[in-house]
Image 1 (cartoon, rainbow over the protein chains, first blue to last red):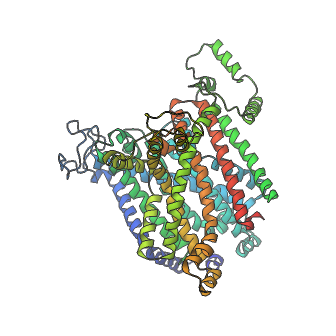
Image 2 (tube, helix red, strand yellow):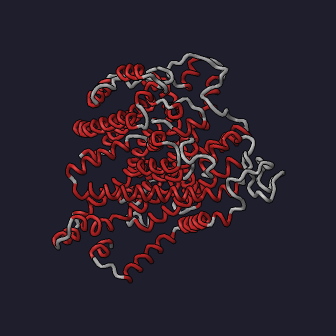
Image 3 (cartoon, rainbow over the protein chains, first blue to last red):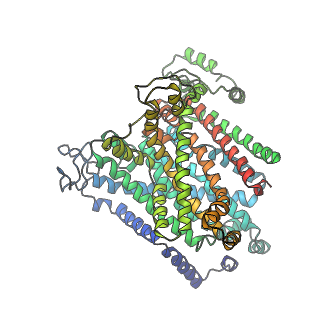
Length: 302
Length: 334
């Protein structure tokens, strides 16, 4: 089946639509994936419209209403639906603004590690030889360190902050994309259609990025969703350790770090940011499972 | 098998050299003066600076410095902590048993719960059991474990008061460290209640650290089982009239375990490197907390040495897993 799409060099409109329909057919068979997709789209809308939706400014401190519980509990107020934190900031507004940071981290980290990984991986898989050896040894070295520890040390070196945290996480995630791309390129490179393109006079760049790469995308897309959710988790973890986004940024991990001392007094300041992280990551992972079912022919109907 | 071992080792050596170059150059790439960073002294007179610079060998060519550093590392010299003035390797050896104890308990927990869960999900595929198990596994896989730890502290330690919040054992007990493993040492000490206390301290960190491996193992066991169950030899075994538990337990499970064993091995490597988040939340005195504390104390000597030791440990564990894998699955040796 892949042969058919691979050997037709011109992807005409109907076939593309058919492929999209086939993709959606398998994706929508997975109910969890569809739920995840809709929840994710909801988060995207929430992040974009945060100033319109949030009832308060996320950094304004209402000094007279510190550590208010959510409205349904005794002492809660309807003005602060999910309560306030230790300096009187509205929890709901901070959570809504937090969506922006988490999705931003996911997008940036995935884009950086995906493009970097693809570029390096294609070169390694296409040219082989000493180039490949050097690249793979460097990736092995990065993989020899536990990823969160390496990210933590890198951020400590670069200086704490969300930007540096994203750079560090992207760097740590990159080897996975390099390995996947390289393996896929190596299997595709010997296929007939690549040889045909070569005989027809295609140059290295064209062969690498136009002929081979499009046929290697399926595992990369699945890995990209996985690294999207992992990036959110790791950035929150760095924020929690005090090395990610700095207060008063309403980033969920940073919010958790600030809330740690109140864990036995005010459950909502601890529970809600974590729940937000969990729900977001879960939605993305659900989508990832659906993508894998739809894109990976080997696992289809399993 | 011996050639397989040599081949793996040959790959390991350049990687280790690369890792050592990173650990070596990292301190020199930091913004600021490496001499000041490594000595921990902020304000120095030029004479003092020259003296320390000479002491640390910074006045020699960089290649000589690196080779000297590597020579020290090969003899077990990983530098001296700026804060405590203790050798880094001594600190590591003192804290490592705590991490090993926690990691082993966590992986045991993950295996004992994860494999049966994955097998049940695969046999009862599509049923309500399968959906519940896989749903739970996906939640576990998506869990921010630092939050999961705080949540368990709130419920189990705070509301139910079942377990202590942090540390390895109650301060009431004191006994000499024999093996470094609190569970064994507390038994050896013969003090009443000591073992119970050590066990209580271990429960929550074990669950928190084991959660993600548990989810990964359950998911992988399920998919490996599904693949194996559709193979011809399993159908043959069924057709022979063997009871289901024999088919599943003996014929299928054995082959399905091959990829799962690799996952378990790789997870152990990552855990031994220090469960940074779990150890930080529960104030567990292991390698992960040591590294986090060193980052905050700006103890660059410990960060430098610790990174190298940890990478070395992971590489050795992964080598062991590789070899074990070669033993179970002869196909990959060639």
